[in-house]
Length: 424
Ligand code: NIG
Ligand code: FE
Image 1: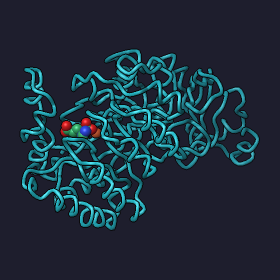
Image 2: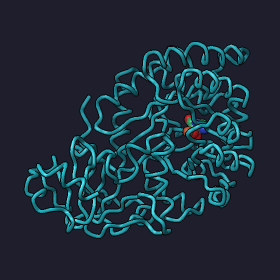
Image 3: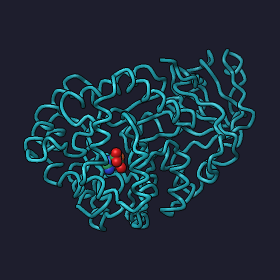
Image 4: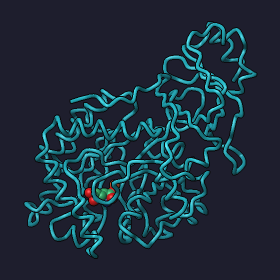
């Protein structure tokens, strides 16, 4: 590593971040997280071209670099990856929160016209400008807490016109923020009331019209669906997945959240990048995911927020070698949670992950859940220089503190991010 870099970068780097305690998140032989106690990262073209102990960095390379940042011993990790969010929505569901506190269930609210479809109404009546501004604010709120890659789903438009509108909002935000945004078409989320007697027609319109148009406009990186008794069946989701596959778009699935609907197996059949939620996934589902290399994205925020009791089969994921990722599932209904640290804490306390698993789940495995393992998720040569400096000693502390603001600096593609929210 060192010799190659010496040859190529004897002219120095564009920038150097030195004297950091680096948790690279790269695979290691032991259960422990790999730490470089006094490390340096060298950046060229927004990518990492050198990473290692500061002492191994040739003095001449340091001298030839103009932007040298002294990290003064702070902990450096890869930028966190939030691989499952629903950030584009209008309104909020605080009234629904109150009804749930009075005893109504999420399913009862959903089947009586509330839930996702109420956010659909609020979203449809919010202007493009307002949606864009809110989405931007939400992105920056995650970034301020150390996130540099965010997946954002559409899903509250729920017809051709409005889903395209939401995808366009996501694409515009993606162009303006300095972090990486992955754009997902959540094609089958809930059935709008005006289609209650036209289910088949709805699924057909999403598969045959919305998806091909969104793909041809270049608005979509991946496709998702909600496979659940209150949402869409395996058969309906597989219709969408077949079309996505024919168009060459990778898929992921909201699977087995409230019941075992065979969602994990369906995701595996289509070699989905990830299956998400998974509270009710059977051993058969876990085995299928292991075979297809599908990542298990755990969403403890929605488990917590919906007062669920059944936890995902974490022990089985470990046994069969299914990589586990964590995400916020940030959305107004089941998880108004906008902090990866909170998701990591809940992943440990509610689902039994170790703090080390939570750290890898929020970095390396989350990158894999987005098919971005070559670009982000670890601090290794060739990846984006997406790094976070923390006022912490150990990456396990990310899951330990609750509500502590320990993020010192967020760096994306080698540039320190300005966290000011733009005015309207
Ligand atoms: O991931 N499960 C489906 N979709 C979201 C919930 C959306 C909502 O309730 O508004 C989720 O939990
Ligand atoms: Fe979700």
